[in-house]
Image (cartoon, rainbow over all chains, first blue to last red; front, side, top):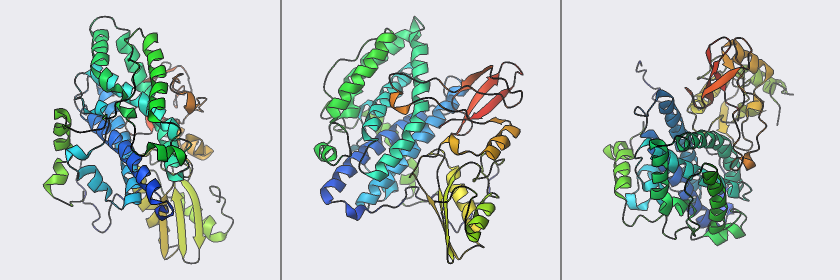
Length: 278
Length: 171
């Protein structure tokens, strides 16, 4: 690749989010939205970096490409959610993404697990993406229009992730012996944290009353469990237990060793030179 | 809103025509107008405002297109603003007939129509659209990878003419 100098007079990356009037929202509603948006952003950001760990080392070239694309999609979604939150709070979106301490991230605990092997990665990603699909469906009719618009776009992209991951889950599950055994082991290991995507939000009731979120997280979790357990049963895989989502499923106390490592990785450039642009 | 290429006022019509010169940096065979990325053009006294719809949210080409549109329109008005919009999702149905022909001529299969309902994607996972070989027209093809060299492209293989080809993903 030839290194062509960038034109120095303009910033290459501009915010993508269209401007909206955040002052029209009352402070309580703005705070509730900000909390929701941070969970959406951090989930997509962390899963995106998890995906990127496979760039260059996936078991086959096609998956190297696929996981790099998944990463690119998810980081793109995270960028919009950080920008939307910033439009509400006045924070710097880059500061949100790269400038926080590890214990300030609000992603679901499901994403704290290291990537482990290929089967583990597939199971975790399938659990996350199916949960994310249920959550996005509950935000699709949001009264907060900028959110509803981006959700509509995100869902069209996530469809390809779901198809890809579900095909992989089936492919591994239908191979008796090692692949199937690894899927079962991953389901067992991840079951305690599987519902953490639906960790209730502090301001959840306000979001429901405002017409932003369709139903409480516990109800979304129950919907999701019905869906995934039906699919797991069809593949003759172990089911997830019917429980409520954990209340501390986005808590970083203590910070998981694997997330501490990931944070070191994804903030390494930003920490090298504060305020650097690239 | 003015539909693609249908500017009713002379300046808007001229802007739409000029935008045919701006191409997708990742698929240079197609213009931003034929790709359906230009949503609106508003041309007033000394100022032009253009709205672009991103194909995929994480696609870095949108920043390049934004700058290329600004550059192309600089001579038309003293103030040119190019904004990203999500007011409607960009879908592959926005690609024009000319755009589809240009894709095919460059060896890209144009996207196929979707029959899936995104609301039912979880319980009934949809199958991917069939790929139509841009070289021989065969539909006897298999999906090799839903993810290709860019976010908007999938890779297929044609069993009849035995060529791999890329298809613009249907979204």
